[in-house]
Image 1 (cartoon, rainbow, N blue to C red):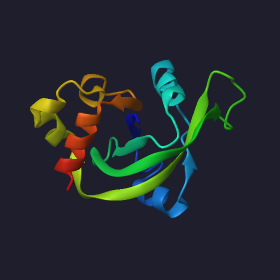
Image 2: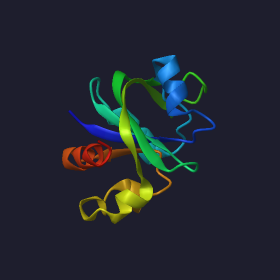
Image 3: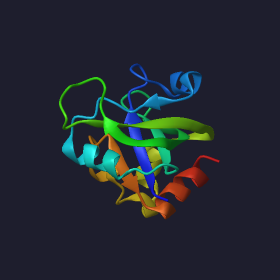
Length: 134
């Protein structure tokens, strides 16, 4: 199993809305590195949901329920989506400041490549963020 982090601005698509929907396709990715990360996602992979811009917190856990396919919001074959479903909310959101202050997380893409919207995490990084949010 692989582990990921996806970012969404809460005013565009919040964790609360995601939970109401129960499932969504993850669209709007227009960066080749992020697109390649979507293509690498496999059904059952776990995903941290991060509120960007407002809040700047990891707020929940989702899972990949359908692997990549053509982004239905565009005819451009370069862009893909995956389907995600919410698993659970973190008891305590984990802020970007907390992540930056944690020595074991200094190398994650959220810190190194702040604008990347879909990024891989090592299992130990994923687990550390979950521990911080429990």
